[in-house]
Each structure stands twice: as structure tokens, then as C-alpha cells.
Image 1 (cartoon, rainbow, N blue to C red):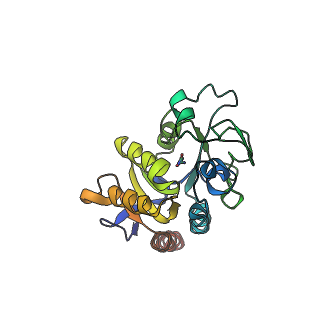
Image 2: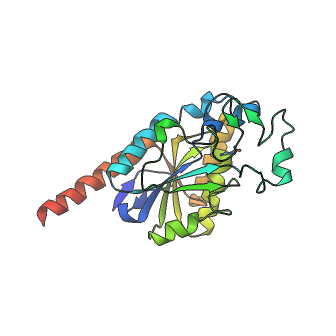
Length: 233
Ligand code: C5J
């Protein structure tokens, strides 16, 4: 068992029952020329989360934890894109229109895919989702339950939209969620703070919040403990 120093109190997890969830680290959100920028956002605020998330990703892979990635996007014929989502924002470019990295938020396009630094490797499930939440209209819940997962470590973008929508969905399905603050990003600093405050309010009404340094320290402790136990056998 590993214990992470977190708010509102310590978060305990075991390697075999915990998954790292990487929400929507797609070029369309993180880089200029994608969907995020088409809505008038400064993408550099999201790029800051990539370095810390990469450290966590490598450590979780080394520890043998399940890593699961999500991507927000739509079928090329846009048959799964609700009118309300397409028209919302009244922006000059809409989902499905051609941008600098291909058609915005369309599966198979360069911009829709995950940034190189965090690219999935063989065996890591990638969940394509048409909505904000990782569980809506996806097989996320099935994949987690088939592996006996009970606890989720959340990273990703954007904090107040797809990350915390997924945390709320996970909460209602009985999972415990820990959000790593510096591995998440928002285009709006005030929303970053507010979204994380909401997760941990009222004794952790949706989950826990910590950061990459505190999580990595706990993971290292768990790894040392399990290799010590293996050596003693
Ligand atoms: C948004 C997301 N912000 N992944 N998507 O539209 O947070």
C-alpha cells in the first residue's frame, strides 16, 4: 500500500488496483493551431502540465501500473457530434473544420492525437470519447472493472472541463480519484484553482488533490517496499 500526502487527507492506493488516467493530452488542446486556440485560448498554459505528467507517466509504467489515455473527438462524418456542441462558442472555426493540424477534433487527424512526449505505448488503452467525461459513451468503465481497478490518478487537460467532468463521473461509479495539480492545466488560472478546490471541498466530495512530487515520493516508497518484500521471500 502506498500513501500520498494529499488534500483533504492522505490518499492510499495499491499498485495493482490503481490506474493512471491521462485525459486529452491532444495536440488540438496543447499546441497552437488546434481546437483550443481556435476558441481564442492561450495554449502555453496547458503545455506546462506536459513535463510533470511525463515524469509521472514514466514512473507509473516502471511500477507496472495500468495507464489509460483518453482523446476527445468525433467520427470523420461527424455523425456523433451533437448540433449543440458544434455550434457552441460561435467561433470562426468549428469542430470538423480544417485547422493547421488537420480537421479540428476529428479522429485520425494529426491534431486529434496525443502529444509525442506522452504518446501511448503498446498495451495502454486509448479511450476515444465524444463528450467531456471519460465514461460517457465509452468503454472506460468496463476496461477499469475488468482489471479490478478501484482508484484513479488523474492528469490531463483541461482541468475544469474534461478532467473534473471525468472525476465526477468516476466518483458516481464508485472509484476514488486523486488529481495531480501540476499535471493538469487550464487556459484560465482562476478556473484551475476553482476546479481543484471543488474536488477536495467538503472532506473530498469528489476526490483528493496532490502534486507530482508527492505522488512520485509515495510511488517510490511503494516500489521499495514491494522489492524488499520480494527479496525477503
Ligand atoms: C475542452 C477538454 N476543453 N479536453 N475539452 O473542450 O477539456
